[in-house]
Image 1: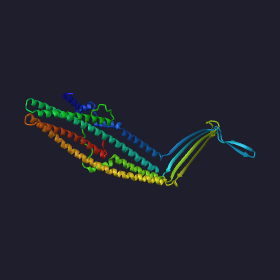
Image 2: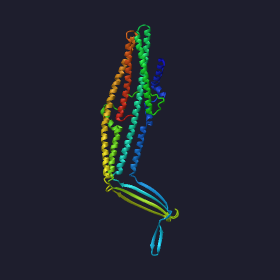
Image 3: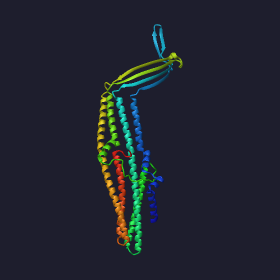
Image 4: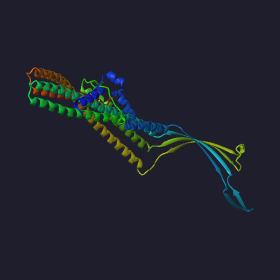
Amino acid sequence: MGEGRWLSMAGCAALLCWGTGAGAQESGALTLEEGVRLALERNEALQVARAEHRRAQGQVGEERAEGLPQLDLGVNYTHNWVLPTFVFDTPQGRNTVKIGTDENLAGTLRLRQSLYTGGRVRAGLGSAREQEAQAREAEREARQQVREEVEHRFYALLHDQELARVSALALQRARANLRQVEALRQAGRVADYDLLRAQVQVASLRSDSTQAQNRRALAGLGLRETLGMGLDQALEIAGEFRQQTRLDLGGVEALVRLGLEERPGLRQLGHQLRARQGRVKVEQARALPAVEFQSTGQLQFQSNALDLAADEVWRKNWSTGVSVQMPLFDGLRIHSRVSQARQEARRQEAELEKARRVAELEIRQAWMELAEARERLQAQQGIVEQAEKGLQVADARYGSGVGTQLEILDAQLILLQAQTQYASAQRDQALALVRLERSVGVLGE
């Protein structure tokens, strides 16, 4: 493929990816927020977290039901093909008596209400609510993980697109320089060595530009995979590197305090700890008396013929009572279960304390990385401006016969490196902002 044709295709690709914001929106380009929305809809880990949250909500209802009245209705029908027979010896002789009737129909209505459980119902409900809150925080953390991955992929694609654009522009400058050297060589003003160096530079930058385009294509595949799109599906993005955050960057101590309160992982461990403590109370309550109110009503039909309209064959009874149950000796089973629950709570408490130290360390590291990235971005912006001016001076000097070809090559290389590092600094600042919000626990909120 000729160099002119290749450059035309590269230019078209660059224009396609780096059109104006309005033009990108009109062509249906994918924005960061749209990508996050797609990922939240399709991410399997988030779907699992949502299902677990709904399961925990059902568990709360199950525990609540333990303290509510229980009303049961049972209906039983029995047909006796052969009735049991009893034989009695009497002075008058042996008598045979059949017990029961051929048709039996009984309906039972039973009401049960716990009056006292030693706090087991209340503690169980509290533990279930803590587990539901833990599942809610797990779902929240899954949402933040999805957004973090999407932003990483999105900024990686933006970065590689910018490098591809910078590489294409560097190749254009090298070609323009080659044309200038060829013209000066024909005029006899430069040596063959200058022409050779200009040709080598074009060949080298053409290879670099191809590599940059391949990296951009691979970054696009990574974003498609994160969004749950087909790898062969067309994708065009519109956006820019993140530069701001909703966090107050006035001081790291305030961020640490906010993170210790808002991080989903820490909140999960806190809810787990309180749920474990609630289980201790549940197990302790098993050693206390359980008092239950019971009321039972029964309507029974007995007859040799299934005639439900006969009033004389219906029997009714109704009873109420209170039952008390208390374990006297269970082989120390309750004591062992209470001990296990207490150890689980202590382990959870240790895990929470360790997680709080790790969270503080991550927040402080993210804070320092953001400060470093901002300073590097500011410095690189000035370096790019100076490199552009340096290339203009080198071009002017060489065109007037004062400068050398080496000055132009050096100036072009310096500008390419400065623009590349500037793009990387933009990406690093965006990722540092994402990392800080993620470490604090408020990403996307």
